[in-house]
Length: 81
Image 1: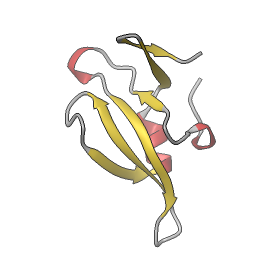
Image 2: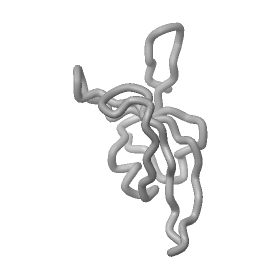
Image 3: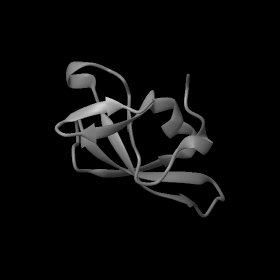
Image 4: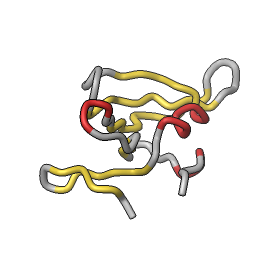
């Protein structure tokens, strides 16, 4: 089941659900409204290409990138049920 924009939370982590080098985990750093009155998400890349970098994206576009929420358990990322 796809996540909705309303389910995105600051501090939570989300994955694209890919495998190998294509796998990415993003952590939502903040959610804000830009000068055009559009909902934005600032996120940090925790796993994958450009790790440790911050980016900003439209909230609707972020939802299209992610497949599910994840959390770090010990040293393994687990899907949040």
